[in-house]
Image (cartoon, rainbow, N blue to C red; front, side):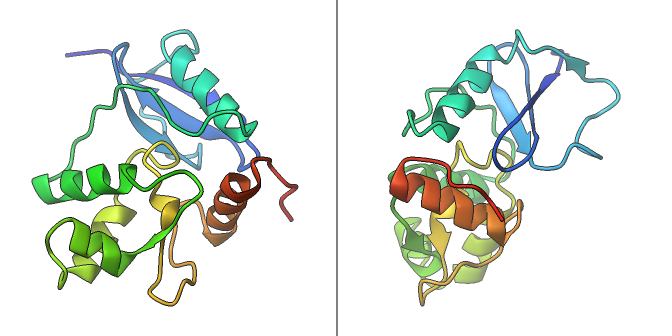
Length: 162
């Protein structure tokens, strides 16, 4: 069994817990409490590439992540997450458009649920998926974080969060 490492990354969205093994990341969590398993080992070094790329993203210097990802989930979830990954930096699409892109235009709620189970937010830009009317809908880090990430991508810089 591979060792799971974790690191804590300070961000304008609060501290993020990044977890993975020495080859790939498998999770990013917005809350520290309850996010770290007792058998994980802290290693900033093992996850240095993810730390650096997240810092570059929040500094407005990175638009695409170049990280190996270890995704669990069902085949359907992985299809949704792959399609979410294709939404360009600074762009948004609706849940309905996402459902159409995965070949299941009637499965808007299922697509929304899969998007909500994304284990690697920010890197897999699930914040870029919005309601049919353009309004922001649920986000694991909260709607204020979703709004912040979209504004960061729109302006290229992190404005102070209220």
